[in-house]
Image (cartoon, rainbow, N blue to C red; front, side):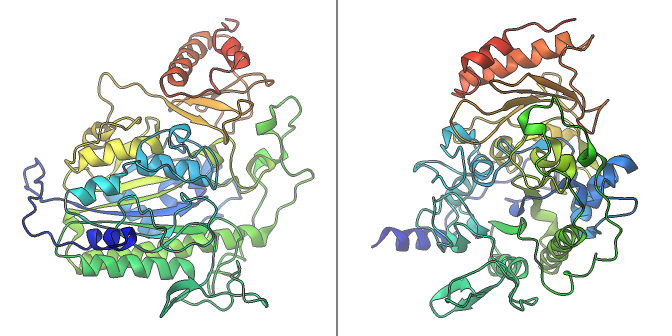
Length: 497
């Protein structure tokens, strides 16, 4: 039997004779299902559940009242928990995804940049659940198997047994089923797949098509524990979306965020404007908003399916992303920098058996913490190789335990040492890079991230604490960037008091 065939069969094996876990709670809920809706390059300010926790100035950076309605994602947050300080371990696709599925830092997966294959032997949360008898599956962008594009159904499925609708790379807008399997349906004149809508509708537009596959899986496996992850390649560019979403937000009076108009003299390279003499492209943001609205409507379809199958009480539902999008903030597009719109990502979770509605988690968490948190929440054992933290008590109690260490560590792309690395708490962010002066942000006093508090009076102890913990992280988790001589000099330096 070929390895691929074996992997397929293992994903569809029956549960006969398998003893399923029982959660330790008053309702004696059996093994919970897990549904993960994962987007790509998603600015957290586009979600209503995040805007309502911010000031008007912070929640509406593109103009007063300029917003997307996201009632279904908001419902998950309102009925469960929302994390206000959730970060990508590296704010770029592949590294972030490798940490999310493995619980390991990018340099140890070793997906430190895009298009690097995750190493054999990595045990994901899906593999742990598959071994426990769960039906597991994945649809959408994977980006952990190298350069293949689109490369449907990668041979190494890392525990996502039904990966028929997994593709390795690409931000395709139109997909279809054929007798030979799925394919990109938008083709150019040479017959090659392209990134254009090509008349896609509610059946063939990628967001709709992928969420339909998730719905099919839920219906098929409604009678047994299942884990399914749908990875939507929107709202990553190109900013194109099907009708009617393409014009739904054209009427809004988009303005440049005030940070786009800043004077960037004296700022480190990663904080400078990317676009000189920047001007607002209203259609670009209107299409981005349209992509977000299409995503939210499809989240609603998934929720309705779970309701119709009476699975809501025993299903964990997660909405998150791999990284953010600057969307004109600080005069930039896209991601890859430690500023909030790039590095902070949405994370909301619904689990009525164990998480109280309306829970708000302010403590800093990153995607490396996902696997070592979700498995304990599901009463599943960790494999012992995770490098992230078990944050389950935050969700279960709505507050940090007495011994909680509020800090995460994130890094720029690549294994070269001349790039940034950061330590972040719910209030402070220390960013260092060789040949750049260190920066300390006070996110409470300066949410726009325009000031450097590193040498300001009263911040010496903060800098010392973050520096010491960043150094410990670098040594423990093999981050050579932290140990660069220039960065060691910074981390061992005491700022002015």
